[in-house]
Amino acid sequence: MSSPLDRYRLIEHLIVPDQAAAYWRGYDLTLDREVVIRTLVADDPRAAALREAARSSAMIEDRRLIRVLDVIDVPATDTQPALIAVINEWVQGHTLAQIMESRQWQPLDIDQAVGIVWEVAQTLNRAHQLRIRHGRLMPTSVVMTDAAEVRIVGMSIDAVLLGAPHEDLIRSDVDALGGLLYFLLTGKSPFFATTVNTPDDPEELPVAPRHGEYIAAPSDVRADVPAPLNSLIGRSMIEMKRPRGTAKIRNLEEFLTELTKIRDHVDPVAIARDSSLFMYWGLRAVIALAIMAGIGISVVAYRQLFVGSGTPQTQSVVLATPTPSASSNLGNLPPRVLPITSVTSFDPFGDDNGDGKADGITGRERDALAKNATDASKTTSWKSAKYNSADADGKGGVGLVLDLGSPQSISSITVKFGEVGAPIRASVSNTVGADPAQWTSFAKAPAGKNRVTLRSPRAVTGQYVLLWFPKLPPSVQNPDKHQVRVSNVIVRGQQ
Image (cartoon, rainbow, N blue to C red; front, side):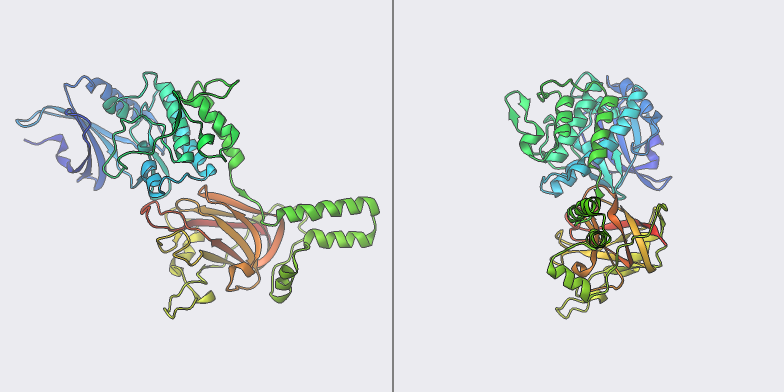
C-alpha cells in the first residue's frame, strides 16, 4: 500500500523528543531536494495545535523564515499508527550554537551580534503583527546559511512539539531575543537547560552566571557591552533584574525599535586610521586662518591639513615611493561609481613556488576567482583558501587589488562579504607594492557586518585600491577553518 510519504526518503533522525514525535532529515525524491520532516502520532493531544502552527507559520512571508512546504496525513499501517507529517525546507548552514562552539565560546563583535538578532527580531515582529509567535526561540533555532543569511527554524511548531518555556508566548519571544543577544555577546547561555539539540549541536552550552535568583547582567561578563545594549537585555529577559528606573519591554515592536537605535549606533562605518591627526591639524589650521588671515599662514595650514605632519619615517616612505595625493578640487559634486578595469588577488606573503621565500606581488590567492568580487552577481564571490588559523596560517592576511585604470579621486569603498564580515584595511597607491604597509591608508573597519562602507575624511587619489584582510573569519560551512569571501565591491569618487 502506497503512502503519501513515499516521495520522501528518510535519511537520519534529528530529534526524538518523545514516543509520539520525531524530527527527520529527509530527501524529496520528486523535487530533488533535502527537507526536514516532523512527524506526530495523529491521535496525540498536540495534533490540532501542530496543524494550526504549521498553517499559521506558512502565512508569514519573510525570506528569513524556513518555510513550511506541506502538511501530510499519513494513514495507519500494520506497523505504524496514523501520523501527521510537517515538511519544511532544509537549508545548509550552522546554528548559532554550533558557530559559538566552533569559536570556543568566544563572544562575537558587538555589531555582529546586534546585526544577527536584529534580523531575527524583524521576522518575529512581522509574525507577531499576524498574531503568530515562535514560542521556543533558542540558539539552535537560528541558522547562518552558507550564503551568510539568517534563517529561523521551527516557527510555532517547535513550541507545540517540544514545549514552550513560558505560557505567555509574547513574553517568551521577547525574553528569547534578549537571551540570544546575551549568548552572542558573552558566550554564556541564559536559556533553560532542557534544550533538545540536533546531532550536530553541542551537548550543552556554557551557563550564564547568576546573582542569587537573577541572571548576571551581560556587562558583568563582558565589560565593553554598551550601556544601552546592557539595559535592553535587562529589560527584555524575565530572569534578569532590570536596571533601576526602566520598564520591561512589552512586545516585539518595542524591542525592535530599541535594537534598531542601537544597531544604527554600532554599524561599522570605517574611519581612516589617521583621522585624529587629521582633526588636530584641521583645528590648528582653522584657528590660524581666523586669527592671522595671512596668505603665508594659509599655505602652511593647507599643507598641514591635506598633507599632514606625520613622523619622519612616514615622510621618508612618501618621498621614496609613488603614492596617491589628496584631492582638493572636488567641489560639491556627488560621488559616482568608479569603473574597475580588473581585479587580482594579493598574496605577498604566500609561497606558491615552494622555495621557502615569500612570493611578493607575484603571490596568488585563488586569483581565477578574483573577478567575482566585482561582477555584481549575487551567486558568485571571491573566496580565499581555507586556513587553520585566523592569520592565514602565519601569513598575516590576504587581499585583493582593484585596478581603476588610471588615478581616480576616491571617496568611499563599499565591501559586501559572502559570509561573515572580516576586519578590513583599505589602502590606495599609484603602483602595486609588495608590502601592504607601504600603501597609503584610506580607511579600516573591524570584523562584523557582512556589508561595510569605508570612508576617508578626505578624497584620496590613486589608480590601485588594496583591500587587505589581516584576520580571516571562521568559515560558515566549516567552522574549524578560516576563510574570507567577498561577493561585491563598489568604489565611489570623482572621475
